Length: 245
Image (cartoon, rainbow, N blue to C red):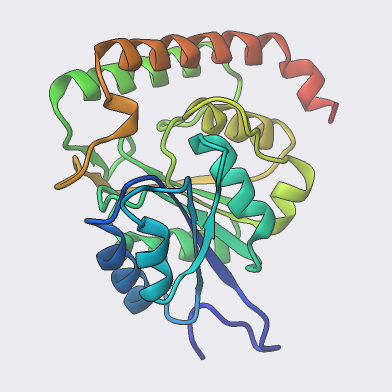
């Protein structure tokens, strides 16, 4: 039976890939996913890339959603999760910095009993291979989050996650912001008692294209400030979220 199917013939796994100008990477990404998770739905949510990423994705066998007039990582992920057909939803970057070959390890963790599996750069077996400044900033954000928040996750801003559909039914993903959505969603899910397991993996810098989160020093700094502000706001609301509000 293919990994992406269930005994009743329904879809078990959807992999959501948010994209913008990933023409150089998307076909290889889809091909590698098809090999390691055969039968899975691969859902590309593209922000109307001028390089026709959405068309290349469709030609490669993915289900492609072309968003016109709407931009943003978190909102693209929410759109993909809302439309995913799988009972387990995986999301990750499409730039090959997160190896598709590690997706089965996340799925194994969910199938073994966790509701959420997080690909982690900072847990045993994981490593962050990006330039030092980016590694340092990410580690600082994670340290800050773990100091303030009651739910402990080594890699809060991972963005490489597999989760059961029922988690999203109770804790919808926020469509606001850039990568802060991941910190908020993981903390809220943990507060509600969902089991989170971290799976170490090696995260590398992209080989081609330009990271939207590192478009320039000012953008990079602005994203960092938004992360810290979101964590502080989340800490103030923890009791409310724990009660399911």
